[in-house]
Image 1 (cartoon, rainbow, N blue to C red):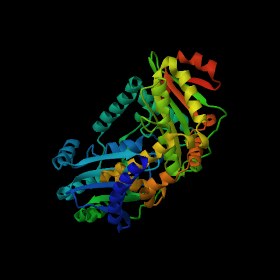
Image 2 (image 1 turned 180 degrees about the vertical axis):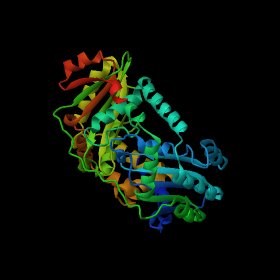
Image 3 (image 1 turned 90 degrees about the horizontal axis):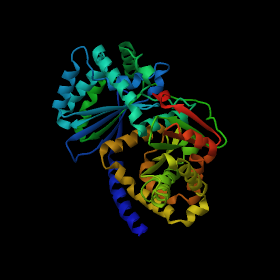
Image 4 (image 1 turned 60 degrees about the vertical axis):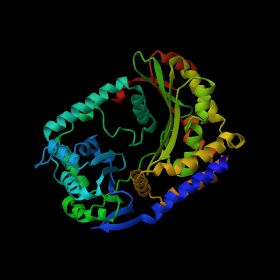
Length: 454
């Protein structure tokens, strides 16, 4: 049965990726690299602009980069925010930004027939945004309210706290959007200076998809946006090796009267622990990649501790991270931790080789891979990511084969590297009454208030 499924999905993958291979073209516009995926099926376009720096450029003034991109349409010297939004809405344009620690991107999509006025307006925003004080104050108030309301969104709050705890002391632990104390310090001058820095200093790369006439924006990019190849800064990061510890380190993030506990397991990954992408992805999928995954069957089907559980491990350019994410009743927390420990301890190569789970994970992951790129925007994002981390596009097409060639030993090694119990950070967001029982069962336990992460 697995072979039939794999053959079918392999044919689908071949059709999709061959089209992409043949239609990817690279060029330079005034020194700015452009990657164009030709697609004549629809009269639409997607544009993604890659900036080779992100939130790490903020230094001691946190959250400025993310605020700048979020407020790029807040107003210019010629147009108010209402004028800008109404104009882009008229053309049916969708636009957004995403700021990571290492890089940022700005995304625009719409109808090809309207690409000229649309991109002129977008370039106008990047060249002339003034970040009006009234709009900045509204945005700051909204950001503060969002953070304060996290006390009622325990899943998001737990993930936020877990990131900071598990990635410490690397520079990637601090939230890109900052904390309450950071938001109040952001001023108009900070945003203007940040925009100028990204326009004039940071290297850019443009990713396009659509028919040939999307290339008409070349002159607009060069003249209206003013972007050129002279901007060459690329963020590079050096940081000390993580602080390893013997045995898991447990942090109870206390929220009063929490009737259930959010639980996260994981750690910061070093390059040697995430560079083998296929076996690491397969290890995550085997562990917590769906209803038939090892964790789901053991924690939900066999014991009824959880409703859902997921696992992920992967890397960016300069760091990686692993996470197991779930939630349970307060009275099940200790037993859940022990079960997860047992599953990880019994994920050696011999055990994997004897179970049907390994073969099922291989075939399902390899078969589902091409469906990740059903939309051009998702495929463009993957091309961008591969360029960012310095890997060949061929890895995208060869990924299913790499998954099927991964051995039980490869996956066991990846599981050990990414989810080593002795290096594990365990974060539990729940009622402070859990502290006593946790300290009774485990050695390295501490409690902190959730307010520390706002």
